[in-house]
Image (tube, rainbow, N blue to C red; front, top):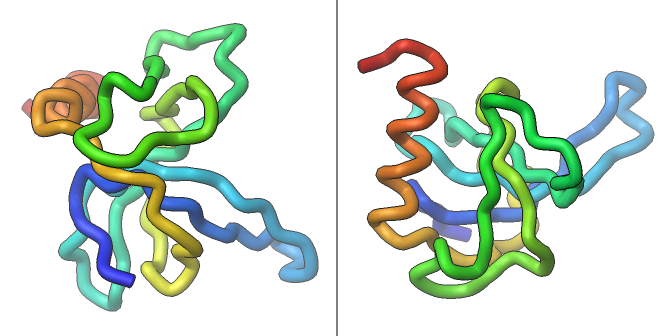
Length: 112
């Protein structure tokens, strides 16, 4: 499956025992890393409490597709993921929404 920057995809993540796993949606932040990897920002549907580095992602942010429920991006938990664990694509963010999240990540990590 081809994925690109600004896509929202569902991935399988294995726990350290390599027996149990969890599926989690992520935002593809940067997709051109070596070894078939990409930088991902995890998404959670637990939106009752938002931390300073978390922001709501909703259907209005999408250029195409959608996620099942209103959710949040968790900037501080950004990590590298193999494209091999991608199960499906939910959709893609609009350019404006992606730029907004990109700016928030750079503000948080100081990459401006």
